[in-house]
Image 1 (cartoon, chains in turn yellow, orange):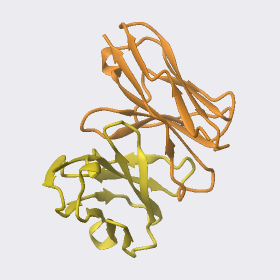
Image 2 (spheres, chains in turn red, yellow):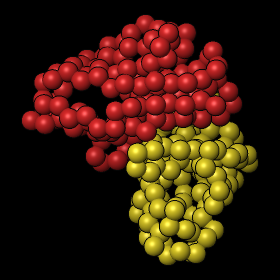
Image 3 (tube, chains in turn yellow, brown):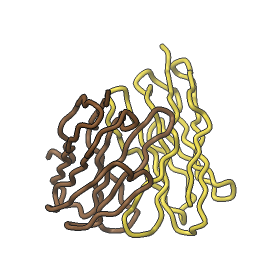
Image 4 (cartoon, chains in turn brown, red):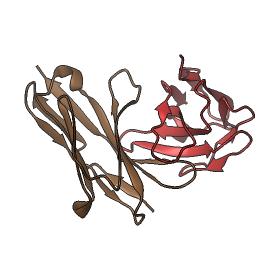
Length: 115
Length: 114
């Protein structure tokens, strides 16, 4: 069975600091997909990124960047120059290449960015 | 474009009462899902559907039933609510084209069972 672990339950930083959210996954499948979602205080889930297991290129989108390393089964998320609006719960998730696209979520990391 | 909508947004039930949560999507997605979110545990899959008329159990299906009579709707039923079912429930949908496609989530329903 697959599993996603986000060891950091809560992180607090001061605005403009860089912060990295860790995600470690477990699966025996060779084809899988990794996701990050953001849940702001309003409660909705916002899709941030999707990565497939065959693409280990790191990705950058503005202040956000993702580091995918199959060797360590990790898919870490870095926010550069954090802002108060980045305060949210962030979820890492995994889905396998099977019918249903079911997501297995990590427990989430609550990020608090203080002014 | 409404995306995924859920009704109701909030509900308080007494132990033993029943209710149905409605999820609707207007994106013509084949797959639909019900998750529950509890503190510190992320989201866990309750039931899912890969098409109209089909349903399947997820990780935590006990105490819930679902139906997918129409492609755009996915109903989650609680026949006899228990305090352990106090949670935030999220519905989601995704396209049929493999796991590479993201799931689109509804705004959530906060359910309290007293």
